[in-house]
Length: 288
Image (cartoon, rainbow, N blue to C red):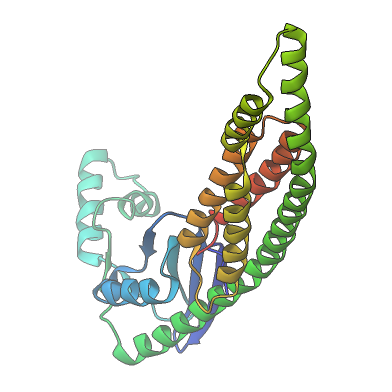
């Protein structure tokens, strides 16, 4: 079953002193490109997170984030009393007046460097175990999103492949008329010359000319490529790159058929096939 590279997953955890939001988004990309944003005290786990994402999502441009919202009364930031007191003392000396307002000086002091100090929070392994479980849930969500997104794409692919097959059947019908058309066209050209010709030689040249215009091989290969594409859509694993290669081969056979046919009714059908194929090409880039 195919998967889209576009997806979104999110989970929210309520821990004793904080709310943790895990969010993961992905878009299409040729390779796996992971961007991780997590609080500094979880940095030692970043490599593990990257490995987990790589094993689950395989390919795409992935943005992974962990957001923390403190919900407890306690805070890791405290007032650096000694530093602020020294700032106020220095500010009084600058003002050099007995009417200086300590409240105003305090407002200035707390904005000075090192007025607040933040104690670095250490990693809590039990807390991380819960967050890690939340990451698993978010990855499950994004994978389900990718699968659901691919269902509509799969339906669209099948409809367009079906249309190309129908146009190919019409090419088969038109091909018989094309041979007669070429024969009549050549005969008329020779008749217009008003010269005597060897009928056997004419038939030989006609056969040689028609062999150069023969599109039977292209029709057979195109039909095989279309069936192969549908077969890969039903495969157990998603392989967008392989489907992309098959689409390239389909396009090559359609183009060769159009250039060799040299017959307007068939070339019109070729244009219609190209139109359907272009729409497949646009969407195939989003397949994992």
